[in-house]
Length: 82
Image (cartoon, rainbow, N blue to C red):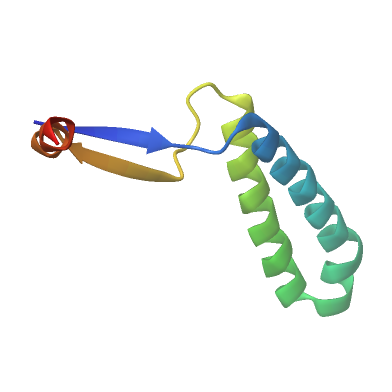
């Protein structure tokens, strides 16, 4: 029997990453897009997507897991016996 554990960022880390992401989006709109055109637009869109990801993890109960750990039940039984 196996189980899957989902791991997501802590609340403080999520809030800090969300705030930094908002700063990058603001910089993208104010400076990067006017100076670099389409590359600035792509940079700002990527910053916005990353900000949305961290905001969703911070504000929702469920969130999006960063990675998943699969645990095999037989392996954990063997570890306890030692």
